[in-house]
Length: 326
Image 1 (cartoon, rainbow, N blue to C red):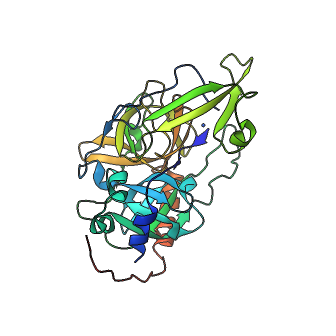
Image 2 (cartoon, one colour):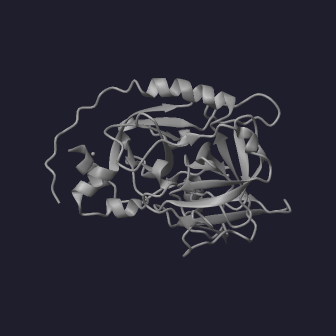
């Protein structure tokens, strides 16, 4: 299974400079191709300032050029996936917008400054990546927190955590959201004739796996498109993968995919959207299953309480006064 962070061509460098002065794969022939549709994959765009948008943020690592998604918590803290976190906290920026490209392509410096915040500290779950004991146990602990500098823009507020996880039964419908791609094509290739195959295999640009009948190896190039816009869709609960992770079915044309890493999964209640999941990893092609860290599980709730204290001890970062210009 693969993590769902997304390399991006977002024009973030100039915007950040302004701020500073701020998965086993499923390789069947039904590979998802939702290009041209407004979707996370198979979903709809989230409106700027809407109820769903108010606690979701974009995350961009300016050093690794990777795009992820996060959920706003109280006290300038963002919940995301551990695999989204780079070595230095200040390489990350938090973006408060439904359309990230629109922000970073804007010539209005005041708009960029109003929508983008620099991270000052990150805390990663220490269990992430560690092998777990027991049959079938592979709980990655793929969760992390980011503390950012500055105020929370008007219209945004912290997510509400799910109070009753008993509603997460097999077959129930939940809501996911993220800034990831809306098109994921798997194109079969011949490794003997594919240009630069070994190098691209090492870089993860192409991959190989067993055919569905297990009798042959097949290799594929994955083509991704459409990241940078906040989208949402509904998925069906497939069941608990282990004590801290829950699996959703993505075989019906609806999916979380590259760039949605760290993004939220909600149960919609009479009190609104209640957060319980953090996007972790899924099958290659995003047409099989996806795993979410169940942040409301006892183990992860214990980690979250401790991590909030740790990340809140972020060192102060001196702000540089900047004359507002258009």
